[in-house]
Amino acid sequence: MKLKKRRIVLVLILVGAGILVWANYPKLNIISGFASKNLASAHFISGRLYTEIIETDNDMPLIKMAELEKVIGDDVTSSVFGLMERETVCRDGLGCVLINESYDKTQVLLKPKRTRIENNLPFPYGNKGIKDTVFANVDYERLHKAVDFAFSDYENQKTRTVLIAHKNELLTERYIEGFSEKTPVLGWSMTKSVLATVYGILEHQNKISMDFKPFAEDVRMKDLKHTITLNHLLRMQSGLEWDEDYASISDVNKMLFLEADMTKPQRLKQSVAAPTEVWNYSSGTTNLLSGILREHFDSYQEYLDFPYTDFIDKMGMHSMLIETDMSGNFVGSSYAWATTRDWAKFGLLYLNKGNWNGEQLFSPAWSDYVSRPTKNSDGVYGAHFWLNAGGKYPDVPRDLYSANGFQGQRVYIIPSKDLVVVRTGLANEDEFDVNTFLSEVCKAIK
Image (cartoon, rainbow, N blue to C red; front, side):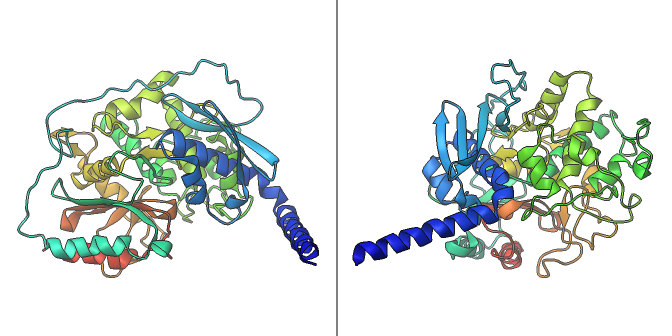
């Protein structure tokens, strides 16, 4: 009798699994792709264990259906019950990339030329360590309670790291077990703000204008694309069609997990509105900007080098890595990695209006530009940065603007409090109480 019951249970489990796979069969390619890419990058870039990544980062509805199939050298393959195997390859200096059968693993790849700055300056400008300055205007007890709150109720809030910087100095930082100040963290869509910064630097160097029309000379374009400028793209108001739904086989999912060249999907879309008429958040737009950036340089090597030589390495953000797609384009929408301290440096660059240790990387007007509300965004969006101008966080200063990424990756810049707050984890804003956390941090600064 017991054996019969076990058989019945086993049959029910198999039937249930079969129904689940059948119902989601069209998505299996994307599910396997997400799992494979996430596993490979988190392991090879952050140095974390596959078992831990599977149990945490990949523990999401549908994604947890996928399983690690095999690891051969720098290659990671995942599948869903043996179906739809997807392979990710990791490359020195370029990060990991989800590949298809057309990818040539034997090809010789160019990579960015990185320069490491060594000096005896303390954070954020050097590697000496952290100053032990005690600020009279900081209520440290209240500040630490705010950090305690961020790390409370881990089952729901899932905070991994927090760093708070004030007046260019690190006030406090905290990490869960398995993470430290040396652990690179995936920024997801915080990468969009990183890519936008490259445009700000080029504009400051008089090498590009936000009025540039990337489609103006394309005779194939017979709709409103001719009028689209870089400004429209940075403000997500180009009027180009795009579906950013992550729960379906949408434009964004097909781009991230099926496309060899991620700069093309948005480029091929038609206009559904005139520029500035609608605001539509689009990862495709950012990768289109990455492609436009590549076309701007005389050589592919210059494209690879510029973000590092004139921005990332110049600031000493040596842990930062922007992964490229199969075609060699920076995946500006989603795939920048950096330690929590280096993400904080990024925020401090904006807090200081583009000035880094005496050198002006972008114009002070650029930080005003990215933090100015975009028409029809209800005060939540600027130019590849998110805003609090519309009062989304009612108890937090309205001048807050931020780089935002999936699952609550955040770099908050609060000029009125001279603050940068970094929070990373696995919970979005419906699970992590941003308003309470940030309001308590701000109240600790008198």
